[in-house]
Structure formats: C-alpha cells, structure tokens
Amino acid sequence: MFFLYSLLYTLAFVLMSPLFLLRRDKYAAGFNERLGKYPEFHNDGRPVIWLHCVSVGETNAARPLVDELIANYTGHRLVVSTTTKTGQALARDIFKDKADAVFYFPFDWKFSVRRALDRFQPSVVLLMETEIWPRFFHEAHLAGTKLAVINGRLSEKSFNRYSYVKSFIRNVLGNVDLALMQGEADAERIRSLGIDADRVSVTGNMKFDHSVNEVDNALTSELRRRFAIDGKRLIIVAASTHPKEEEWLIEVLEGETEDFRLLIAPRHPERFDEVAQLIRETSYSSVRRSDTASEADKESDIILLDSIGELRAVYALADIVFVGGSLIPHGGQSILEPAAVEKAIVTGPFTHNFDAVVKEFLSRDALIQTPEVPQDFQNPDRLYEVFVDLFEHPEKRRQLGENAIAVMNANRGATAKTLEYLSPLLGPRENQ
Image 1 (cartoon, rainbow, N blue to C red):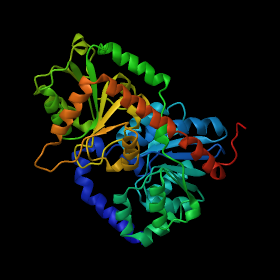
Image 2 (image 1 turned 180 degrees about the vertical axis):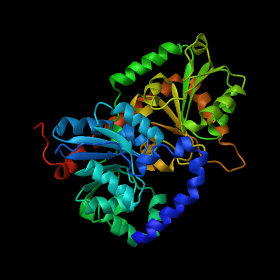
Image 3 (image 1 turned 90 degrees about the horizontal axis):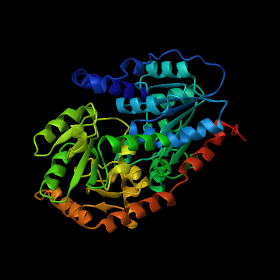
C-alpha cells in the first residue's frame, strides 16, 4: 500500500508541477527544504519537540502552547514547521526567539521525510489539527519518535474521503501515539477510521485560549494612529475574504448612508493586487497597508490590509467583523479571534469547516449568520439587511460582542488539558 501511495503522490506532484512554475511565489516557497535540504541543526543531546502548524490559523492557535512548552520543558528544544508560505512567515516572526528552528514540512516521500527526521531527531512530533501524512507517520514511528495529533479536527468531508481507503488509514493511524481532538464528533470520526480508542481524548479547541498580548496591542495602537481611527466613523473589518466576497461587500455598502470605513484583508496574499484593482474601480478612496504612510491614510474609505499576521491586532479596531470564506461554499474561516476582543461578528451561510464552533456561538446569540438562499438570489441582499440593522443598533453590536467573549471564556482551558495529556510523551514538567 505504501508503494501505491508513493506512486499516486508522485503522480499528483508531477501533474501539479505546471502550477508550481506558474505560481512559483506561492507553491515553490521552501521547495528545497521540503525536499529535505535543511540548514544545519546541531544536536546537543537535549530532546527535541517538533511542532507542525499548517498555515497562519494553526500557527496563531499554537502560541499559548508554545509558551507553555517553553516554560514547562526548559530542558527540551523546540522546532516548528509549516506547510504554507504565509504560515512560515508568521512562524518565523512570532517564534523567532522561542524556537531553535523554523522550517517547511517535508514532502511525503521516504527520502525527504527521512532527511528531516535525521536532521532534527525529534523525540516527539506534535501535529496541529489533523493532516494525515502516511509516509511521515510511518517513518517517524520507525525512528522511535512519538507522534501526537493535537487540537485535532476531522470534518465530515475529510472523514468521508479517508473512508474510501479505510484499511490503509487504519494502518497509518496505528503509528499515532495520541490523538487529542477538539470535540466529540472529531473524536468519534477518527476512532471510526481505526485508531485505538484508548489513544483518543477530547481536549477542546486551543483557539479559545487566544489572548491579546503586548505585541498585538502595540500594533493596534500603531494602526489606530496611522489611519486616524477615532470612533467617528464605524469600522467594518472584512477578514479572510475570498473571490467575489470583496465585490459583494462593496456592493452591499455602496448604497448605505452610514459613515463607515471598510478594512479588507484577503485570505490569500496572491490576491492582494487583484483586490486593490477591484477597489480602485469603485467610487471609494483607498490606501494599502503596505504603502508608505501618507495623509491619505487618515481619510480613506477602504484600507486594503495586504499584510501577513496582523489581523489579530486589527480586530480590536472594529465595530463589526465579517468573517470571509462564508458567502461561498468554501466553508468559512475562524471566528474566534474577533470573538476574543468582544466584536460583533457576521458570517455568510457556508461555515461547515467550523460547524461545532459556529453552532455554539449561534446558540448563545454571539454571532449573526446570514441564511443560505437559492442560487437565483444574491447572498449580499441578506448581508445588507444585517449591516443596516447593526449600523442602526449600537446596543446590539455591544451585546453580540459581550456574548462572544462569554463563549470564549466558557470554553478556555484546552491548552492546559493538552499539556496534561502530553506529559506521558514529553516526560515530567521540568519547572516543578
């Protein structure tokens, strides 16, 4: 089965190679590292914890865990990997003084995986959320490395996909020492794929443990000064937007008389220029975060947030946060970071990637979600009604924010539970 997997993986790689060339800036980032060509890493005898985060969301979610690992396991070394370019940039920024190395996760071939394991010689690998890499799992187990899935999430869609090769996935998951899942539904799905039930536990979602730090506060203050955000105009943050969503949002707001400013943060950096052009074609004045600071910053109607890793600080400036990927069938993006700073949050109807979290917020009146409508109706029509209602009722915005932080506070503690469950793999805490 591993031979067949490697063959299919290689075939998929070859078929995607034109995309690597055409969009080299995105897909070829870290290419040499992913082939196993890593910088020198001198093993000094201390055990190594390898933490893998996929992209920006997982990297942000790992912050409190990284702090706890460093505080409690002073005799260990920490290395961090990511898959995406944006995740890598953020990890290099926020973990530069905390991790001994930050690098790209290897391609899932035997030679590249073995090079990575030989280079860093981890005693434990912690994988945020649930990326199942068969060759990596197998080779890590052969090398005597403990393997744990943490903050695990397994959607119905992913579960159905893995179920087509259930016997193979069962063998792959046999290499996992511990699976710490966000919710019972996630736990049940991964158990159904064949992992031993006694290796699975529910710890909650570490993203609920998000907290604002001094760096975030400093950046919030900097942005407030630069863009003259003084409370006189409503601030709408459109976060992690996808194609069509920026266009629809602007369309919705163009007929609105309320005095507001719109801050747009596209999900993918390669779309920054495309969205900038879209904004220029409107009647609104606009600036880009990446531009040199100017007087235009203070009056612009739309601010394009063409930066990486700054949304945490931007949310604090908002009166209303629209979370993207939800007006289209993408499945939504995380609502937890704006919730952590008590903001009124709005999403579209497509949030299946975060189904359990969204349902929790809806049940506590901590979120507004527009309903799904037939294809011959525009989702923006419903979004317009929501925005007008929130514009006209500041007390509703305030209540939504208060309810959101209440949900966050009620669900905190996943990081502490995760650390507790990891102790058999990591050993006793060294600060005790």
